[in-house]
Amino acid sequence: MPNQSFWEVDSYFKKADFAVIGSGIVGLNAALQLRHLQPKAIIVLIEGNATPLGASTRNAGFACFGSPTELISDLATHEEQMVWNLVQQRWEGLQRLRQKVGDEYMDYESFGGYEIFKTGEEAIFEQCVEQLDELNRQFFQITGERTTFSVLDEQIPHFGFKEVKHLIYSKLEGQLHPAKMIIRLQQLAQAADIQTFFGLKINTIEEHSNKVQLHFENAWTLCAEKVLVATNGFAQQLMPNLAVQPARNQVLITKPIPGLSLKGCFHYEQGYYYFRNVGNRILLGGGRNLAKEEEQIAEFGLTDKIQQALIDLLHHVVVPNTKVEIEQWWSGILGIGDVKQPIIEMTSPRVGVAVRMGGMGIAIGSLIGEKAAEMLVG
Image (cartoon, rainbow, N blue to C red; front, side):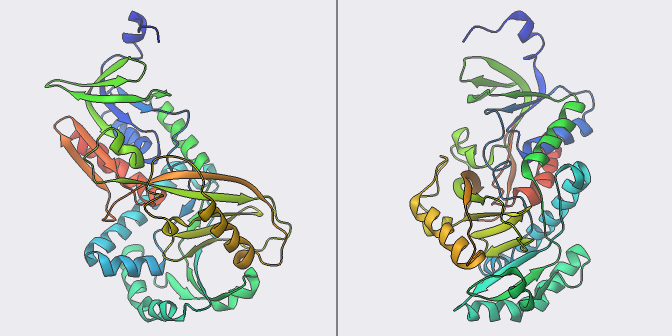
């Protein structure tokens, strides 16, 4: 690569007050909040790819905060107050996202969500039913909605499912177009005079007493007073000691299905499987639980085992007796950990992190980005 010119160093690469690494939902919201807190600051947003590849534009577009089985599993493995605090963060994050972006800019639709229970899963269904009153009580304290969850078995014939015996409805869930969401946030960042670089990959972060120096793969550099790492599933590439691991999720979308009656977000097996309508198509993804160790990887790709499991679920359960063709496959990289709690912390005096969204980036990303900006400003 050519050396940086004087003009470039004196303009594009002038020392910034704040540099945010990662232009997904967390990074964009952090940059926007930094502008709110520091109206005159020089704020730079750095993205290593043409688009924020990890999960922000490659997820399923679920505006949700957890299915009953996922919540019950979390309550059994995490401190109870932590679980409800996380639900609170997810709920608040969704409200911030809708207020900031606007429903019309991201195709937000309030169709609700459902958890499906197949033949042979009576025990887990009954466990959920026994705890619905308590779940609803807790959600009322957070959302003000008295009945978030309810059994809705009578809707099974309407959706046309096969092998599904029970449905639990989640009233407050919605769905959106994640790439349109990011595009709108990018527009807001541009309007806020936040400079964005695409295709600049960072090799190392070098901290000094009076600055942080970012070294790019093309041998260029940029300095900032403070830096925020918001690369979620890829965070260990820059900060190997962070307690966040990548997790690959595989996704398919069908060609249009004439007369499709299915609308809403659907969860199965603690959210490890999920599907929804996108207009008159079906998007279906997940299956990471079939190969957790193999899928704990920061590389995009598809595997026969998980693809076949998703195909079987599509044809045998979701749209049985219907000719359905798959149009496209892709994968995304999540950031997960042993604890379902985002990491928002200063790892040194001038470098902070906001990572480990746990597959709930749409719900929690706006709030986490704002909190990270407030942390960075101090």
